[in-house]
Amino acid sequence: MKAKKIAIVAEWLTSRGGAEYVVDSLLEAFPEADLFTTVFNEKKLPEYIKRNPKTSFLQSVPFSRSKHQSIPPLLLPAIKSLNLEGYDLIISSSSAIGKGINKPENSVHVCYCHTPMRYAWQSEIDDRLVSKPFGRFFLEYLKRWDIRNNKDVDFFLTNSKTVQKRIKKFYGRSSTVIYPPVNLLQSKQSKPGNYFISLGRLIPYKRTDLAILSCQKLGQKLLVAGDGEDLSSLEKIATKPTKFLGRISSEQKAQYLGSAKALIFPGEEDFGIVPIEALSCGTPVIAYAKGGASEYIINRKNGILFKEQNVESLIEAIEKFSKTKFDKKYIIKSAQKFAKECFKKEIKEFIERI
Image (cartoon, rainbow, N blue to C red):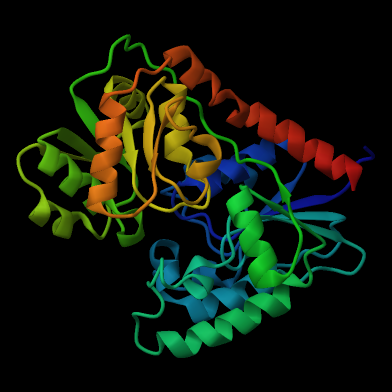
């Protein structure tokens, strides 16, 4: 492939999550690329300082580095303001505004779409926008903005068949699935411990409440790792078998996941990084049978799927789990295709083809 001038666009770089790991892998795959973003928090993500991210006017707006999502009307012009003139290839990482860049003439825009804006198109799952004052009015404007701006995307990539269907449904566009990179973990634990674990941000659509209530009814110990806006409400419904760990490090994650009976994953996710991390430790996953997890959790092979997002269905799945024997080597192997090197290889091959 001849050398091209490449730009990688992250919507914002203010905290670490699955989208940032995709950006990391894109930068590794294309080390010559320049990095663009609307706003950059150097204290939270100092590892990006060496890449000298080019930012928008939001960088000088007070509080934007920590509370950018509280000023959504400013995010739309911010992504438009990024100057991408002269770049042959632009790769955006987008779950919201990233696809809305101003694409220069004669450049190619590849969007790695984590999902169409969940709070715009699936407010029944994510109501963070409609629950705010004037949220419904802004939601309709946001939908029109989203449709209008995805027309400047030349190629859509996405992280799962689940999201591929959403892109077709909401945008009327085809896309190519390239599973996202996952930091595969290694656990030294040879035998599972005496607890289940739930891990991730404590926000409503993750449905951590189902894991807590189900384990309590069965008298099973549950560790809840992570923090978020739901913490206080979850603590109110939790009794003694449930223990809150707060945010944990990568080393602790491998330890806790590797020692758990199973990860309980009751939310509907676009893909779901945490279940793959659990599988890489040899730990089976009890997951809701919708979203990305339904594509890689195979019943009674590397986990158990439950069909209804309620306590009764999850309890039934936990009881099935207790009667099932799992092959740890098979479970670990089922996670290998999601390694970072696989993602980088597929991305580079796709870019070469186009």
